[in-house]
Image (cartoon, rainbow, N blue to C red):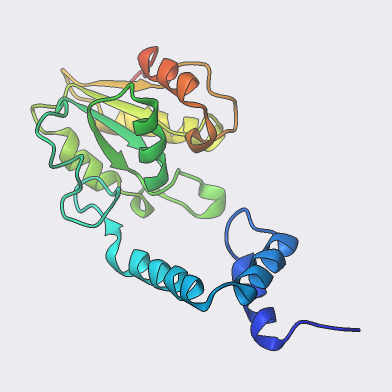
Amino acid sequence: MLTLPEPLLNLVQALNKLPGIGPRSAERIALYLAQTDPEETRGLAQAIVAARERVTHCQDCGALTEKQPCAICSNTTRDQSILCVVERAVDVLAVEKAGAFKGLYHVLGGRLSPIDGVEPEDLRIEELERRAIDPRRREIIVALSMDVEGDATAYYLAKRLHRPGLTISRLAQGLPSGTGIEFTDQLTLGRALEGRRTLPAQ
């Protein structure tokens, strides 16, 4: 039985580790790269290395950036009174595309999940607390996935961040249950932001 050369097999295995790329897709991409112009392949490799080496997390909000702080945190025209808490850096991009939010962000780094060993100290909650006590803050929007872990994290944050004059809110209905905001269309996400509801602190 004819098999692929070892370098191609290694490339297929490497590509198969990427999210959303299964074995067949990985094989097709590997075969394409092996037969395309070497300069194009070299350019792709350089772009991957440059992105990994130059892109990091914002020291303030945790979003992806090349400069510190990121373009959103350093933008003085953004509404400093509102923080939108998201699970991952990619969620910042999703909310920005919706165009309904003009405040600042905070990337939590995950959701509470005792079953999976994710406790409060594993997330960027202390950093969020330090940002939340800023007297300019008037609202914290918890924009986490609509599932059990997302709900538990939202109510935990509402209790922990509670202080007079600070509203803790959650995205409104409209987001599919169990779905991350990364996969939500821009119109639905925009309406969810506009119709957010206040979370009880008790």
